[in-house]
Amino acid sequence: MFTALVIDEVDGKVTSSIKELSEDLLPQGEVTIDASYSTLNYKDGMILNGIGRLVRSYPHIPGVDVSGVVRESTDQRFKAGDKVVVGGYRFGEIHWGGYSQLVRVPADWVVKLPSNLTLFQAMAFGTAGFSAMMAVDALENHGLKPSAYEVLVTGAVGGVGSIAVALLAALGYKVAASTGRPAEHEYLRSLGASTVVERSELEEPVSRPLESERWSGCIDNVGGSTIGHVLSQLRRGASIASVGLAAGSSFTANVMPFLLRGVSILGIDSVSLEIDKRAVLWERLAEIFPLDRLDAMTQEIGLGDLTRYGREILEGKVKGRVVVNVNS
Ligand SMILES: NC(=O)c1ccc[n+]([C@@H]2O[C@H](COP(=O)([O-])OP(=O)(O)OC[C@H]3O[C@@H](n4cnc5c(N)ncnc54)[C@H](OP(=O)(O)O)[C@@H]3O)[C@@H](O)[C@H]2O)c1
Image (spheres, rainbow, N blue to C red):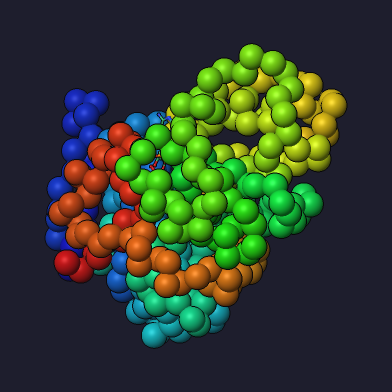
């Protein structure tokens, strides 16, 4: 038997409860993992609240990330005792996820824990941190280099945002962090932001197709009117890595920045990235991220706290990263 947070749909409403389940209910997969930690991402908040039709069938165990120790594996790449991380491939969406003491997944979804990370730190990153790493990688592959001009991070106090600010600063970039939370300006500076921009300034729909060139790149976690606004302020040849939609999924923009400044929008899809590239990016994240900054942005909760936190992340009230101890 193992304990998990189970969500169910009754009369169109999603409810959650902590249950004891039998191991034979676990889905198919070559690797069975004794889970240590999971985490809370924006998408987990959507799933816990039944938003976005991400879950295909109920009852369901959510949690799009997990770290833990392999209990048994029928795939020779893994053996009992290996410390591993799982995220992406719709784990926690259409496959039972990480809010569970026991997890079973296909071996092709499993990444070995980078040797300098603890299982806790891996979930302090989670999909949010991994996506921040993907965004930085995409921007660099598109020509981003440290310069006198700032890289903008929107939704900066959130999970992806906090990791992105600290990651870019550690790589030598000048970072501007945009937030709607005035009380967190000092927090963002402590992560490495040199400038803090009010969210409302960027939310204004653009009045002119081209504004003054301001940003050498952008990691955008909010979408909506902000992305159209930022587009008009990108420097020549610069790019936006489009990660999230906390403010909305549609936007209005003008094509002039594409035609006259050669700017780009790069899509970040952390769910379906190939496993080999995933392992490489986990290693890079572990190598370059200032791990002493993780503590300041991370809090630990238990399975029983998820209903409340799942609501709060959708309301934009969660700061930094939330690690879920699945054994507490
Ligand atoms: N593409 C991918 O593969 C991928 C992977 C991970 C996450 N995501 C997406 O990335 C986004 C961020 O995820 P997360 O886990 O970091 O979530 P999060 O912790 O909730 O952060 C989102 C941040 O967006 C800002 N925000 C919230 N509501 C807003 C609104 N109505 N208008 C403007 N800004 C708002 C807030 O930042 P401030 O308080 O600083 O303003 C909030 O902290 C989500 O949309 C998520 O779905 C995508």
